[in-house]
Image (tube, rainbow, N blue to C red; front, side, top):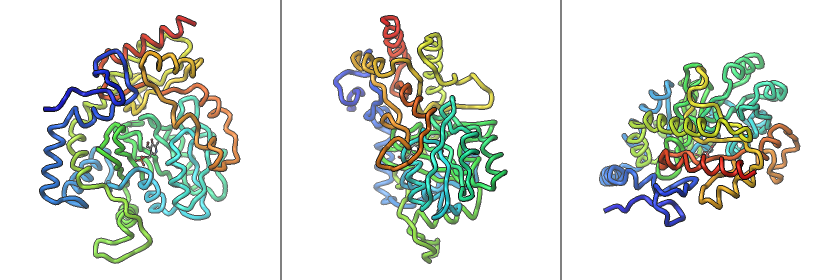
Length: 384
Ligand SMILES: Cc1ncc(COP(=O)(O)O)c(C=O)c1O
């Protein structure tokens, strides 16, 4: 018998007014029977590495995104390294990325042998195409836009810049499975893209996982080799490669979850809509666009990232009411971590990082949880 889900790190039953930022046990407990059955099936077949479950998941993922190829990899960070190398990025090249991203985006550029060039995000928190254009140099080889918080960057503008300067686009789509811009899915714009299946992602497995997708047969072949020791299907070693494969067990779990993924996204969008309706009237906040606000974007709300006056006080107030929140990336944009030695100032992004806050948004939340968060935020600003 499985006990009722408990909130991670506390003894408060889910459904009470306290709201955790994230509830990891829920990821298993909400589907314990099905997940246990998948584990038993895969383990009893001894189907652990590069088996049929993985191949099936890769086909379904590619079809879902609308691309020709998907390859499961160990995580999105590796996926980005592999994608960059497979499209030909390497030593001597510069790759432009928005500093409002996980350090993984920049680390992938570094480990592909290239130089990460951080630029400003815009008011929408996504990479600013004008900043990209200003950063293009004779060494620029690629643009690596992060499809942040489940919303896509202005791919039309980025594609125009890429075409003008002869650059490649590789998408960091770690947070954006199912997001669309102008009718096309995240991952289908660039020469390649990487997705993350980290447990807290909109499609998560029970550990690390990721995928690289591409429409190019050439890039696909490179990704296949690079993620499996540089080996070709016949065993010939073609280059120095990594060992970064998506476990067959995780692929089986992901295949199961992909079947109900659209409903999961609808639920996330419904929760975001409640936040928008409740908090939209507070002048102290700036909210992300609502799920039905613009026809070009379909957002999957990996996160709900707001800007808030007196952000740190608000956060402490929420904490005192047992409501979790988080600072994106631990509170700093990538270029702000001193030990990474970026000698650049990005004033817009730096100012933004004094105001940004992530509110809880995940499938363990009831509507009441979200209303409880909104009640607390309203109270905070009423108290002045
Ligand atoms: C924007 C972004 N890029 C890259 C990553 C790295 O993904 P992974 O943990 O699968 O390596 C993440 C994960 O949080 C992310 O949010």
